[in-house]
Every structure is written in C-alpha cells, then in structure tokens.
Length: 271
Image 1: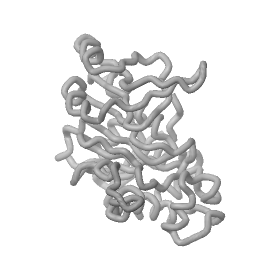
Image 2 (image 1 turned 60 degrees about the vertical axis):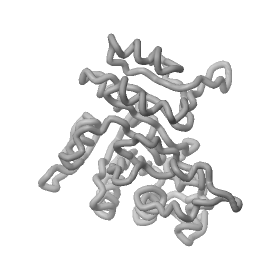
Image 3 (image 1 turned 90 degrees about the horizontal axis):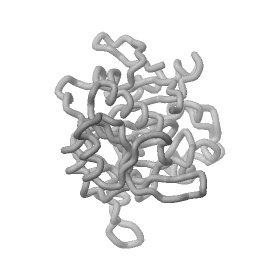
Image 4 (image 1 turned 30 degrees about the vertical axis):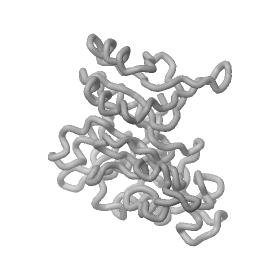
C-alpha cells in the first residue's frame, strides 16, 4: 500500500512508489536522478523497491550507499564504475555498486565507494538510489554528529520513518535515544507519539541546524559537508509501517503537521 496526496489534496492509493514520488513533487523537479534515502524504518526496502521499479520502466538503475548495507542476494554486483558502465551499456539492471565486506560466512555488507565517484555514476545511470544512514534496525532515529552521509550530487532526499515506533519508549525504538531525548527535552523512557515524531523528523532532517555540529572535540567536523544535501534539494517523507487503520490515521495526522513537505504513507514489504 502506498498513499499519496493528489493536486486536490485527496489521498490516493497506488502500487508504484516511484510514481507516487513523482506526483507529489512540483513539476519543476522532473529530472531527479540521484536519490538519497535516510532515516529509519524501511530505508533499504525503499531503495530496493525504487531500483526495481525504475528498471521495469527501462531506466538504468543502481543501488548504492554512502554508509553500509547488506548485499542484495541475486542482484548483479560491481565494485568499480568501469565494470558497472559496461554492464549498463546493454542492460538496465538493477545493479548494486560498492565495496564488499565480509561480516560472517553467511553475511556480506556493501560499503561506499569514494563519494567523488558519484559524479561519474550519474553519467552511467539514469537513476541511483543511495542509502545514506543507519538505524540498527530501529524504526525511528535522531542523527549523531557524523550522520547522515549525503552525496553531494543528491537530487532528492527521502526521509523514512517507521510508524511501529509510535506508542513505544524512545529507548526501545529510537536509534540514538539519548540524543533524541535531549532534543525533545524528555526522558528516554517517555513514549514516542505522532507529535514528537514530527519534531524529530524536522529537527533531525528537514530543518536540521547543522551549525551545532560544525565542530567536534574542538576541531572542524570532518563529516560536516555531508550532513545535509545540496542547498534547495527537495525532501519527501515516507511514513512506513502503516499496517492498520490506527497507524494510517496517525500517519495522516503527521502528514498534516509536516506540511508543506510531501508525505507518502506506506506499508512496504521487504524484498
């Protein structure tokens, strides 16, 4: 299930995530090729769904990361741009691009290629979905001084939020709960609700004041330039895990509070 608001401000259901994103954005944003996905509660699912949808549309599609993600089983993998470009000359993919790192005999993670390669990546691919944040499998998150990691060629930022976090203690469902509690002025044992979720989404991503983390331990923060996307980059918020009418209603409440940022309400199954 994917819900988006049409031009008449009515919620419409579709089964295509890429279509919903295109419809919710102003028509001036018609060439969004590099999509950075941050937040918690479904980032990997969003990225994988997008590259598969794009490929079905005949678009050369690449899945990558600026942090680390689990390697996608069955998806062609490349660790250099030349090999990826050769593959994409004849096929649309999707493919996965990055550096392999063995975690265990049965688990391989993919880490980032140098961010400097992203300019060339945009030249060989029609669409790129880049996971740029980590949340340790929690449905909510407030970023630390070095997070997230936005590519400097980002055209669109998607912030994902897991609705299963609502009604649960911060300490149990939020990655970086101490930072989240400090920002909210509450205790880590306090329950996360729709209103506080909106505050964390705004303060951690949409309207983040990165000047407070411009320095770290008395020195310039080496990650400062990647804490935000390029200026004027549009955002879309995906409120995922809308698994029942109660959570759908809460998501619509959050969507109103997040105006004017476009919001999608989803129940996305993992690929």
